[in-house]
Amino acid sequence: MLRDITIGQYYPADSVIHKLDPRTKLFATLLFVISLFTFRSWAGLALATVFLAVLIRLSKVPLRYMVKGLRAIVVILLITALFNLFLTPGKVLVEWWIFSISYEGLISAGKMTVRLIFLILGTSVVTLTTTPNALTDGLEKALRPLNAIRIPVHEVAMMMSIALRFIPILVEETDKIMKAQIARGADFESGNLIKKAKNMVPLLVPLFISAFRRANDLALAMEARCYHGGKGRTKMKPLQYRRRDAVVYGLVLVYFAGMIAVRILL
Amino acid sequence: MNFIEARRLVHEYIRRDEEGNVESIQTALDHVDLDIEPGKFVAVLGHNGSGKSTFAKHLNVLLTPTEGTLWVDGKDAADEENLWEIRKNAGMVFQNPDNQIIASVVEEDVGFGPENIGVPTPEILKRVDQSLKSVGMSEYRTHSPNKLSGGQKQRVAIAGVMAMEPKCIVLDEPTAMLDPNGRREVLSAVQRLNEEKGVTIILITHYMEEVVDADQVFVMDQGKVVMEGTPREIFSQVETLKQYRLDVPQITLLADELRKAGLAVPKGILTRQELVDVLCRLY
Image (cartoon, each protein chain N blue to C red):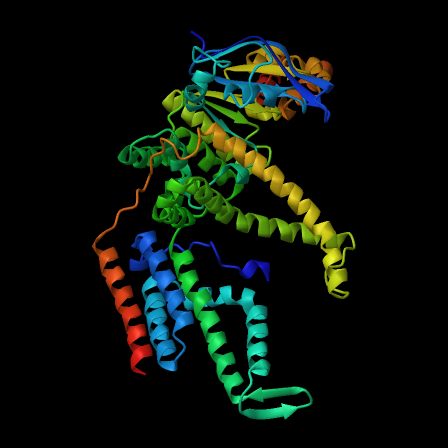
């Protein structure tokens, strides 16, 4: 399951979406997420579907690759869908013992599932088409005003980009430790929840130790390469808005306006 | 002027308990005197715990001397003001390739050093190009480091240091975690940098095979420099090296055994070719 997480996994390709300024993409994601959760009508969802489909098509990332990322949230999806399905009051369709499925429940479960899937797909379009460094660069620049209230924006952005870089490494390591412990008779599968949690200890302890060791090494390596915070730092690829960014800002706003129109009119 | 000058360099790791009282002192460097000329390929050999890594960290001012002095490129390492200048001029490559690559794309990692020292943008791009080319990694420019082999990752790390245009690169056991192929890749990249760009190379290692081509070899044991000379001079003393728990290259060992068995094989044979030549002449 761990291998399926595609968050923070850059997919190199040559597409319009790849070339966009990360700030543009962040802004678009923000509006897309807001639009998903504020406009609940079918027409709204249809519009979001079109928007998302166009994005995925433009990004040149194979759909299969994106859907893989969904596997990691199947459990969450199921739980939300089930809660919606059984706990929404309304016109009862099926009733059995203490469970009852209402028409409204069915609808809202369906919509919720679609929305969550769109949420993950929409955000993974951004993470797959943007290098983590560009992403954090974008965040850093977009949030720069926060420096005024003493939030160390550069440092936070740096931490995020390093965290992203180390996700695949730590995942691989978890896998390795797991296998090593299984080889020595550790059991991660059986037992109830509490037992399972307890069984994770021989996995977590070595993982943490190794993570700290890595952090220490990395800090040394960064210092050795003259890292001393954001002061006096230049950029290899400074962010610069281009024509296409303006166009995309426009399109996203049109999409959002469309959503509002759908909500008011229908 | 020597690039590195260490005079009676001492470093102690002091362990303190909760009240700040000294619990134990471990002397990692014990009055080390050492000179390295610019443009040379120098190897520092030593068994685990010999102090060689501690010495390497001094060259980049990741550690500062407890006693004694160290000049790097004519600058006193104990002076805080020289810190960034020294780090810029003496780049460092570490053992674990994964733990020193900070970016998720090769070229961004190579650009990290120049970004830190405030190099203007167009210049950074130029330097990234050149340093990737100098280690033969240009075609992996936009790849993720996670998908590279150990040797390739280590070459990226070397490119990252090269992009800061240092006068010297210190490599602290750069091949310890690599397979024989990766080891060869890294060493030949380092050798090329030394020959073509004239970068001073200080290779810290415990693999004797790697130092055969060095200009000068230092052997450390228990914090002291115990041997010094060309690889040939060092490797002709097989027994002394064994005493410092270092393994002599197989070929040298074989030549030594042959000599002990009564053949007229000279001391300090380093490569297979040399041994073949000598044996052919004998018969």
